[in-house]
Image (tube, each protein chain N blue to C red):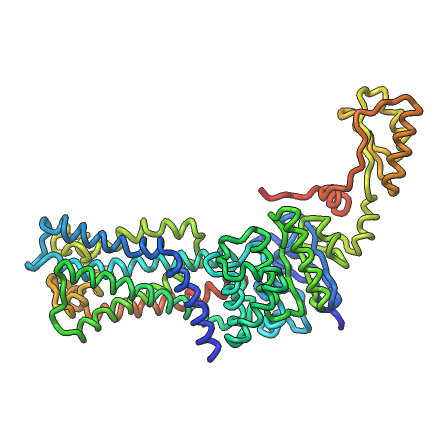
Length: 259
Length: 312
């Protein structure tokens, strides 16, 4: 058990050092959400309507948080598939280190990484006019929901990362991008055609984003669908479902590396 | 007893293809065994099973006295694996790489650092200790990778094609390091596609073909089985071929299209002198005369009866 903690920390530290020493990557990770906030908030912002009224930048920020979190799965996927491809995973497996350490370390590094991204985005949002209105505790609860989703996505990333080659992992954003757009992240689902609206409302990302809007006191909350009305519940449940599916799948996949 | 690596009737299938089909191996402690074979012969599969990375479908194997199937954790604490790819982390410095592995092998931070310094010294990397590994040359990177395998002074070291892709100077460096750890008592199981590598390092060579042992013995035993070196004479006209054959002896092979005659020889330089003077006394002026070591292809041809299949 003690070794599991040490192993996790050693593995996490490796990733964090990577992150710190490769300014280009830090920049690339942060530049996209910041530029998006500026483009959507300040460029498209004046042409955007929030269903039910409200300021678009106030509406946008929780959506941006959500997209950043969802993109995190790409990071996990990439790191896991690169480790597997380079034989690092094999070295881990042939060593006496605890197998929990490998994945726990991954989770810690990814959560720290995403927390920093959220922090930078939030500061950026505060500068251009976003804020939270229902107290710090609710705001922290909202961020906790985002990180809960991120934790669930770590398992999705581990499973997919063991499944694909790094070249394929690199293309993952092509799928992630629309998945984060067919949601309530940038536009209210109420303004979309019927079928897409249903998809967007039931998109797990939408639940977390809607719950966060509620906790932040930002506009764009509510809707007719069951999913929209129970966003807080679903924001807790969806990630739990992901974990329940992908945790065992990842463990199985990891074990089957020896088949 | 006394075998650091022992395998009996190992079987492993991938989908419909048998990668190992009744593979036996016995490596005495403190020696180097070279697993030689073409791509796809099952070398890597064998190493991965012995290093507990792959489950075996049949047979049994013991490494450092522990059963690989039932006592995998004990095996892992006794072995180190150095795969075909480098697991060196480019972003970390040389020392950080070694400390990381030390920590993962459950040394304390202080022990890990002390061991890292020791290894950097041994592998001639002290000056580059605080440089990021991405600035290392190919040979330095390989040495760092090897150093990370020695953190725990493993009793068995698996080296999977340790010098593939290295230039001759760096290969020499790696060979030197391997010899050094063997002198310290580590048993090495080495896979390679290079005959000269096995020749340099191995006490015993096992030739694998399609998942089975095709031949084994000391390098000298195998070489004599192959007929050793060949002498090759190229002439300008086909009329000269029978004369050359007469000089080279009746076992000589004649390749009429290439105006080429070749024969096995045992006494390298003496044979060259004999053939040169023999040709001169018969008035034959050769286009080319050369002594040639058997190529890897000829090794496989001789032992397995078919050419090495090289995967593209």
